[in-house]
Structures are given as structure tokens and as C-alpha cells.
Amino acid sequence: MIAKRFLLGVVAAGLVLALLPRSAAADGPKGTAVIKGKVVLEGDPGKTGVIPVNKDQFCQNAHAKTKKKVPDQGTIIYKGQGNAVPYAFVYVKNIKDRYDPPKDAALIDQKGCVYYPHVFGMVAGQELHIKSSDPTAHNIHALPKKNSEFNISQPKMGVLQRKGAQTFTRPEMAIKIKCDVHPWMNAWCHVMPHPFFDVTVSHESDGGDKSKRGCFEIKELPAGEYEIVAWHEKLGTVSQKVKVGDGETKEIEVKMSKKSASAAQPSRTILASSVQSGDASSDTMGDEKAAVASE
Ligand SMILES: [Cu+2]
Image (cartoon, rainbow, N blue to C red):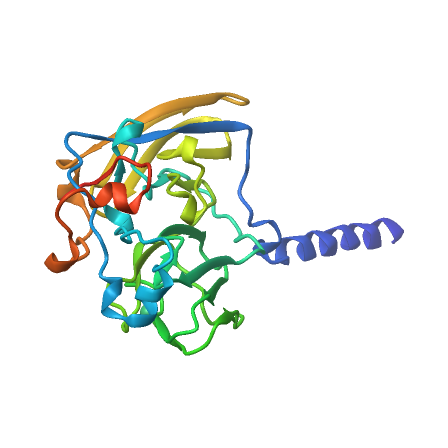
């Protein structure tokens, strides 16, 4: 009798365990492998585009102190640093496990009528907080295809963090984010099912380290053979296979070119009047020899 009760207890405990929500253990495996490297452009980068902030007095004033033209972030190539490509989204394609989103929210800021960061990644389900550092009106309009669209007006400075309101629940590449008040304001959000991605380092104004421009690093990978994909809004996507073992760091160079642009997302339109002739790059990037990957 006692043995029978014990057996029933074991069966019941097993049932409870089996019925526990899978989310309790949804986070996929992490490891100790690292894949890092640099994204570079092969070929002539052309000139850096300039955004027409002068079409709005507030936006113009916000940049008046620096007396520099405001670069179109998607056209910046660091010619003086081996044609380093900033704002490329680099990710691992063939990860089968699903991962829980991090508890910390991602943050996008509207500052001087420019989005920071210009390109970012999130894990599906992660919160997105939306900040405005500008005492002028913006609206932030996300245009996903697989997730819910949102369009929020932001008449004041501050951080919007309405729980659940700005979350992309499904993986989706290249969600365009724009401001309907200032048509040059654009950002790109990539929603991934896992955390194995990075954005190549950009200008210091967007949190970049000058010595690491164009570089990326994907950490905590389980050992394996992976397809590494790099996406850039003007240069399209390229991929390569990389095999990496436990505790190993593999360094790669990712080459993009105008040819790879044929598979690109639709390019942002830069108003012809906004692209200055002459050496806008040295104006915009200070000591940079930045130049544009022309369209
Ligand atoms: Cu705006």
C-alpha cells in the first residue's frame, strides 16, 4: 500500500514537471565561442550624404554650435580606416533555439532630429523605450511587416516606457522607423529570435569607439558552424560560413560592395538638395575621411 502511494506520488510529481510552462526553461544554450571582425566596403565609397536639418528651425539650431553638416548615417564609410562600414547589422543565421528577451529594454533617442542608435537589434519580446531629447515635436512611426505597427506622437522631452506598448513579438529583419514630421529621420530595427548579433561600430555621437569603427563582436556562442550574415541598408546582405569551437575566438573580415546592394532593402531617399557637393565629409565628420556609398 505504501509502495503504491509512493509510486502514485512519483507519477504525480512527474506530471507536474511535465506541465510546467516551457518558458521556465526557454532560454537557449550559451557558450564560450566568439566571432568578431570588421565589415569593409570593396570599391569606391563615394561621398557622404547630408540630411536637410535646415528645413526645420529647431533642428537647424540644435546643430548650430558644431557648425558641421549632419551626415546621413546610412551613407557613412570610413575611408581613412580601410573603408570601414558602420551601421551594419551582423547576426548568426542558423540558430535553432529560441531565447528569452533580456529584461533590460532597448532604447532609441531622438536628439537634434536624428535617431540614436541609427541601427539596432532586439530579441523578440524585448521592450523598446523611446526617448526624446528634443524640446520639439516628433512622432515615431515603426513600419513592420510581421509585427504591429505603431505611430506615437512625442510633443515633449522624456522617455516613453509604456509596458508592452512598444514591443516587437516576432522576429523580423529591417523594420523601418521614421518621423513623419522630419522625413530625413530614419532608423532600422532588427528583431531576432536570439541574442547573437551586433551592429558595427559607428561615430562617437552614436556611442562608437573611434578605433573600432566597422567592427563587431558576437559573444557567448555555443561551439558550432555558423552562417554569419551582414546587412546594411545600402549595401544589402552578404554571408559567410564560420566554424568556431569552445573558448575559441574567430576573427573574420566581411566584404561588402555595391554588387551586394542588389539584395538590399529599398534605399532611403535622400533629397537631391540635401546632398552637398564638395567635401561635405570632412565637414560632417571632423577629422574623418568619411565618404558616401552613393546610391
Ligand atoms: Cu521628428
